[in-house]
Length: 538
Image 1: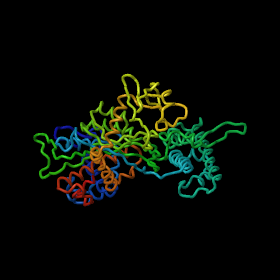
Image 2: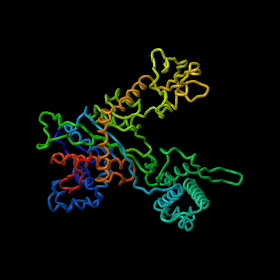
Image 3: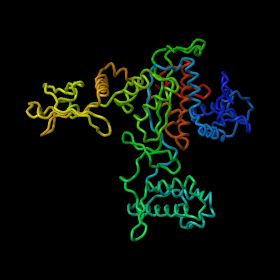
Image 4: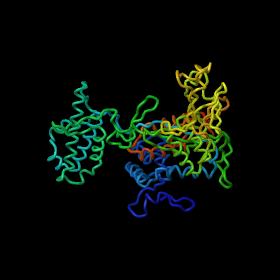
């Protein structure tokens, strides 16, 4: 057990008092953190514990301690995930740092996301259905070999589904590939019928691989009864389910296809938040001094880590990230984000709900006049919200003001009809040949926030202030280069998030070591594990 000074027993839910003796979860947590600091495999980490004096010293072990088998680390991670304790280690570290004033609420923080490749192979649609069927047959061959021999033509299917689908080249002809896809579809439906037959063992249909096969076939195939019999067809691209629901692998059912800036990947996204205060006032509580010798700017420490599937947009995570920070008592006064996290609704909502000011650029006016930089754009019109009127640059007032719903959001539509027809500057205001100018505004509070944000981001002083956000790119680079965060080690969203949490703890310890030892903030080098001497790449 790991017992805190105040008497609380951590990890008690996952590690009961009764049972066979094992390693302390606190020691295993430390080994896992150091494992990610050096980007080691389980086997390599266990080897270092057995033979490395630096790890023996860090863990308080005798020099002749035999260590443990590498499988212990896997069991430790599984226990944490099963009991919902993925963030326990990060919570404990941040609590200790908060007590010493090294992280605090009310300062500045910044957040950004990056893609994470799942620990599976990228497969096209043909390979995906073929490998899913092969995986189901493998599972059935292990679980019920006698039943499988009686149910399917083993010799024929062994030739077709024996090797992994990606281990050979599919036909070059489009028609032959389509024929192969339909053959996969017919075989898959036949196997599902056999599994769900009345004389088949009921538990077969509950096998995870069979459940995945059923879902994959629903997502990729149609089956219809015609005069000629049962006909199997592939779904067209436009008939596929939404990307958030569509399986991307038979082995990792949480991984999804992601698209960002024209680049596709299969897997997840990770959102990293870190402190970025620029003063050395740590506000350490009385009696909780920081480490002697630490001076200069405070270290940039990761305060939150969130993992999602690849289809979740940044804007969808703005509120959840603030909830996570609020739960730790680390909400910033100013939060630096890129435009992907922001909207007028979120800027207003975060200020009202959390008291946080989002320092972020917003999308510019997209009207033809604003894009061209000529003519009268939205800012040339005066809006009288009380009288529900708009005045154009020549002094004419609107003839129509009406609430509306545009693409699922509330809006206000303002029209100038009769007054626009004889206007001498009509060509600078609207491209319509018959009607007048139309304005679309958001509700008053949101529109005023949006107008203010657009005015702010054109100011050089604001741009210089917003430059603080760029440091998060260095943090992402450090996470990828040091801990290997770009590629998931494990299958599933929960274990991938656990990996990211331990990576964040490792980066925090690396940064604390650099800060306590007086290393400059702009140095970026990798050193030996015993020193944890990696600089802050922010």
